[in-house]
Amino acid sequence: MAEKTLYRIGVLSKMADVSPRTIDFYTSIGLIQPETRSAKNYRLYSDETLLRLKRIVQMKQDKYSLEEIKENINVWNKVSREEQVSSKLTDLSLHLEQLQRYVKELEPVLSQMKPHQAKQVFKRLVPQTAACVEALALLLNKGGLM
Figure 1: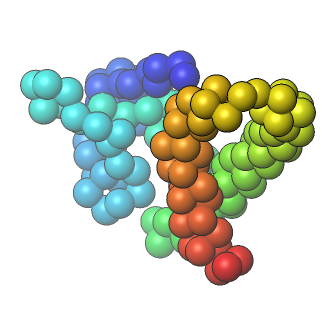
Figure 2: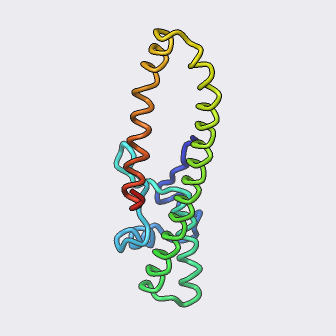
Figure 3: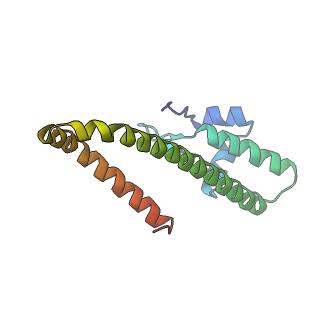
């Protein structure tokens, strides 16, 4: 996974064309939030925050109130999160289909193995498989599907 680029307030303010005080204010009222803090306790902001700041600036220019901006941003984030979840679920579905193909390919091979050989293979598989099945069951439970 690629490492996220993080910005201190000064850099972010220049990139978004707003003052550092504006960033402080938007942070204090919850419109934006730092991704993390540096070792020296500086607030560090991500590219997503930069996009959000630019959207806020545009909405301010369009005469939206801060409350209207906050509501709009929350809706925008919800849609973005839903798209991310949908994408992850699609990826998961594709991986599950691939695993099913692997299982079908392995069944004839495993059935031809001697019992002690098959037992060794299953010993290595069981902990990972159990953890995966447990994670899927928890996910399905949270989604109200079980």
